[in-house]
Length: 524
Image (cartoon, rainbow, N blue to C red; front, side, top):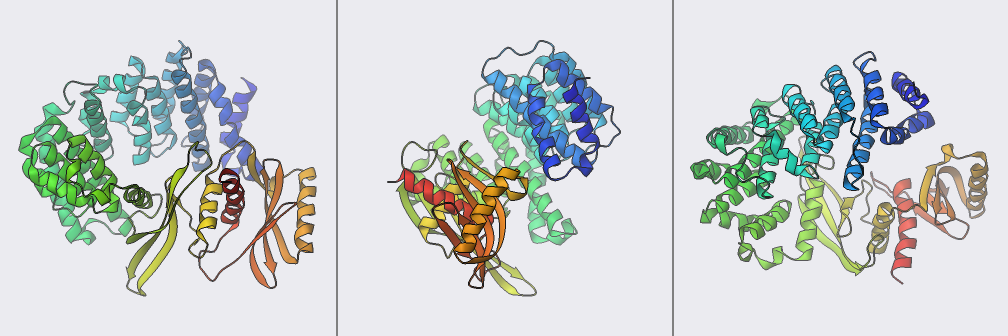
């Protein structure tokens, strides 16, 4: 067996005990998987399938990470028109064996399916469709990742999966993404008839049932789950499917669904109301266009409303101030904040804090930059109303830190986002514990500089390398006040810990340090 294959298998077998540098090295060995030939990749997958199952959670995460790199490498090879290996059938067989051996909750399953979808050959799509229908990944996100290549380079081949995939319409995890794929193929004119047109009546009935369930759930959420998380999950899945149904029925041109679409407008969820209104407008209902125009006032719905209005030729019905750059930027931030990986819901309020046009790292021309102060107001039985607020950015990127930036001047807030956002081969940083002995000497030199400048209780955290300049980031005290300092061989930056539950940390302060230098250089 190839030495690299043996090392990878050993990593999986001892994954639970890997930590620190060893874990980092194991994760970086994903580059090996990306370089393997078809025969080597198949040998690896076959050997993994023979390991004791189920894999430990740590081993499964490691395997999923390796497979992500394998999928990315295959996509790049196809995009660059490199010759695709002719012996992929051995990989297909190995994938089937491993997939069936992995447990249902394995995060690696979605990546195995994505590898098949990325190739898009008849054999690969046949196995893809079979595995997806018979034994889909347990996690909704893994299903989305599995289908993602079919919305990209392999979208023309995706039509071959229909009508077979429609057998999964009854599956809560599969129905929405499969309908979205069918609608995508229709919208892109890759098919002449919507793949779900023959089951339009069933889709209409399903939308009616789903809308009634969502309405009852809004009135009596306690009847649909024992916890807020469970109820939220049911709402998210129900809304996702209802949204997909609205879009599909409109693209099919299913006028008998109009009554169900009007019922969907009664659901409080703004995403579903937007889709129902757009579907009604597409089917020729004037009230749909009116509802859609009114929804432009909602930042969380605005971008989708504007896109539908343009697609349907009714942009003139949208108030002009909802189509400005500022209005679009506000919507971008609210949509990002509402993602499940962020706050999960849109903010209670979002107000412009600062706006300017400036050069930004990674952009050739000046960029419109917007800072918004957003706020969440939460009502709890114990403490009544509690507010959480912060500053987020939209324009060159959309982001918000956990740390509270509200007390900083706009220039430093922009710097924090610019420094966090910047990517360059000459901008690197490492935990101090990972540095070599020679690099540790540089840490000590910069630590002495901090001491000489009056800082105490110095705890080095990271060493940054910024276009040849070295900078130490450390937790420190200055005149009895704790904070974070960044020092290089010319300047020192210090931010005290403020009276907040979300003070600036090492990441934010070092981002400000980098961002100040970048924005100064770009905006001379």
